[in-house]
Length: 194
Image (tube, rainbow, N blue to C red; front, side, top):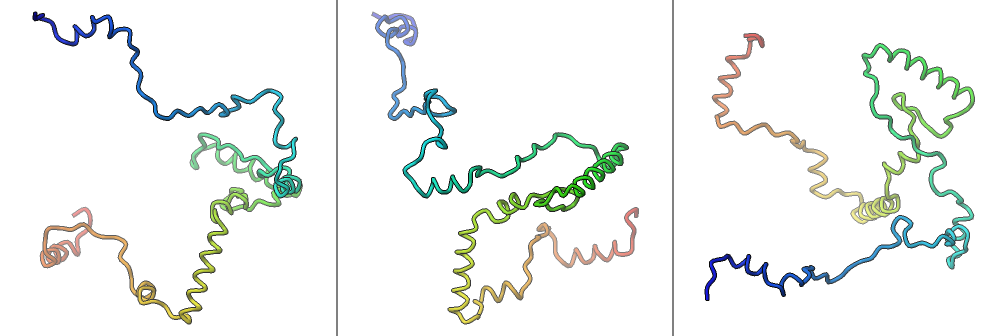
C-alpha cells in the first residue's frame, strides 16, 4: 500500500510520535544556587560575625577591618566640554579655586597632581606593578644569571644594544631603485602645488 504523502507528514500524524517529549541528553548539569544571594537563609551570619578556623585570617581581619581602598573611586562622567568651549574658562577658574581651598585645608595628602588630574598612588601601583612578587623573582633570577656570567653579555644582547632595529617597513613597490631615483630627481625642486 502506498500513500502519496511525504514521510514527514506521516510521522507527524503518528499517535505514538506525538506523545514522546524531545529532550536533549545532558551529561552533566551544574546548579549554582548561591549566586547573587540565592540559596542563603535569612538568618545566615556574615563572615565578619563568626570566627573562622584560620587564625591567620582572623588576625588579618583584625588588623585590616576594611580591606578595600579607603576612598571610593569616582565614576567617570560621560561627556565633557571641548577645550575651545566658551565655558571652559569659567570651569578652569572654578577648578583652581577648589584646588586652592583644598590645599588650604590640607586635603589631597596621598594624591599627586599630574597634568591637572589627581592620581591615586595606590591605583597607579596596581596598574604599573600588578604582581610584585613575580617581578622580584624575575629580577633576582636575572641578577643571578649576570653574576654567573661575570657581567658578560650574550651575543644576542650585544647585538640588541649596538645595532639599530627597523620597526617600520615601507610598502614593497613593484619597481626598481633606479626608477625610484629618477622619479625623486624629477620632483626634487618642485612644490606641493606643482
